[in-house]
Image (cartoon, rainbow, N blue to C red):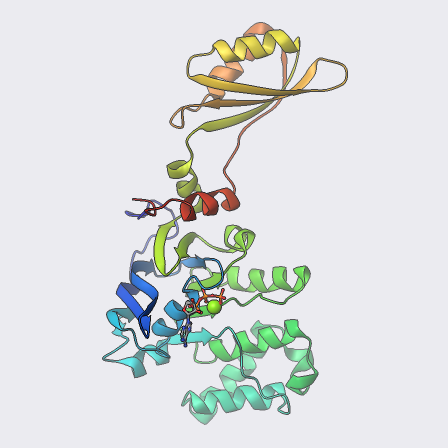
Amino acid sequence: MIGSPPSYTVNAYNTPMIVARGLTKLYGTFPAITEVSFTVHRGEIVGLLGPNGAGKSTTIRILACILAPTAGTAEVAGYNILRNSVAVRRHLGYMPEVISLYPEMEVTTYLDFVGTMKRLGRRERQQRVAKVIDELDLGEVARRYIGTLSKGYRQRVGLAQALLNDPQVLILDEPTIGLDPEQAAEFRALIRGMKGQRTVILSTHILSEVRTTCDRVMIIHRGRLLALDTPTNLTLKLRDASEVIAHIEGPAAMIEKTLLDLPGVREVHSDIAGNGRLGSYLIKSAPEIDLRPLLVETITRQGWRLFELRSRDMDLEEIFHRVVSSPLGIQ
Ligand SMILES: Nc1ncnc2c1ncn2[C@@H]1O[C@H](COP(=O)(O)OP(=O)(O)OP(=O)(O)O)[C@@H](O)[C@H]1O
Ligand SMILES: [Mg+2]
């Protein structure tokens, strides 16, 4: 598996907040997840990414103490999910894939009801309900019936109920599913705003969501965890070439030949504008080489004009396909 030790710069404190050890869940004889192990640290936002049926909800429901694993165990906020599920629930906020909201209840009444279920005292309950309504900008719908809310607001109410007990750990199962792009972006911003405050696992099958919201990404496929790392580190480990894009003005044929002759360069692809002089060049080299300093030097020496120079990151789509199409996972 790709991933450790973590080389990301998420925070200064590396307290493990979610530790899964060999989680396995069989439905009959069908393994929904197999020996899933990982650690998420305090204040991190981690995306659990996988296609339909990969085992995301199964993993999440085990962590939330909704489902017992067939084998393996986990600690959430320092408490064991099997031995101390009451303490886990106290420190955890969980937003399920399908939220059971009561359509005939007003938002405030519903949140107060959830607070009672979570065993918050009267005073604390009132304070927390007011706080989450404020935090999630639910003020203008606080007295509306849940059944009359838009999907975007309903998801927010779902997040509000998860936050009522002011949890250290928040686990969200595909929270942006069914939202329009604007609502989804707002929802992601809310989650992103929790960075450093809470430890968050967010499941999704939307690659760009992970890129914009999460510090690290776990890739799960057919019940197995295949990778856990930052998108940047995954790119470095998975790509078989380093790619630089340069926009250069000058004699195209000569530029292409010169670039190809540089040490370490394997391929050059060009796209030349109508005037035959301004070109976009994609230059591929061995993955460990950063060609940019040499390119700047060469282009300057030749007297060509450089308009842009950047390395091309593999996007998550490519990472995902590369990871899931590897027969053994990534070792
Ligand atoms: N109660 C169940 N009984 C039998 N099989 C189940 C049960 N729940 C889930 N599965 C199977 O376990 C596998 C993992 O399911 P899970 O719901 O964890 O996937 P997921 O990654 O959340 O998928 P999705 O993106 O569709 O929500 C799937 O093949 C699913 O059909
Ligand atoms: Mg699911």
